[in-house]
Length: 121
Image (cartoon, rainbow, N blue to C red; front, top):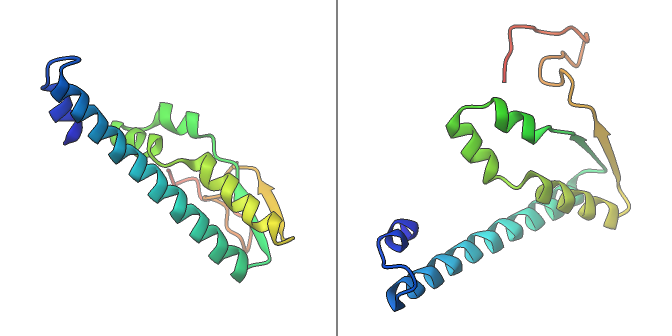
């Protein structure tokens, strides 16, 4: 909503500058909120579990092959920041972090190892 307000102001006018500052504050607030959430989640998971298993996601590939709605959500999700915070929280507590290749992890049965070709992202 603030972006729409900003776009309707005359460029570099006082009202445009005020709207830009409001928008910047809102972006800063969202960034801080997300970062705080990542740290709280990381602390909670690190207290509960001894091992963190992270799949390496090819976010660029997901963005290129996805629909517009999915692309916008992926741009907004901060996977790398979440991953860095989780790894830091676990390593700080001396717990194990294991990377897993991303090939067929959603399709593969963890019991028998069979691959379900019908599942898609």
